[in-house]
Amino acid sequence: MSESVERHREAAPEKVRVAVLTISDTRTPETDTGGDTIEELMQKAGHEVVSRGIVKDDSPQIRTTLVDLLARPNVDAVITTGGTGIASRDNTYEVVERMIEKKLDGFGEVFRMLSYEEVGSAAILSRAIAGSVGIKFIASLPGSRNAVRLAIEKLLAPEINHIVFELRKGAQ
Image (tube, one colour):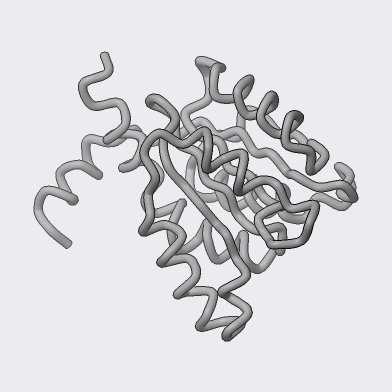
């Protein structure tokens, strides 16, 4: 690891405040395994889950909910699960992609590479995306619990502090 990455990680906040949003027409609080997985793994990594919710896979509802979450002063990052496929009801990608000001192309690319190692060519169906909206971070993950676990353990838990640090630089 480079010396500058190491320094940035050391200067990054120890705890990131995360809102978790499940996007699904069928999930309920009892069946929200993707949201449960995000919450469990982010807390295990030392982060605070400050909000949990479920919204239907409906573009205006998704956008309104994301705008509200990103406007909260106690939210540093929003992680969504669901709605990133290519089925006609999968709208998350389109909503999030329009909101993002600075896209982290590497997030989706690396996620699909890691997914390929687990599920083979089906990885191309994933439209996982991440980036910034102002000084807030947003990442949209597939609805599958295994995909969520992969993204959190391999990408977000190790790097989200550094991402938030970078987004806050010069914003004070």
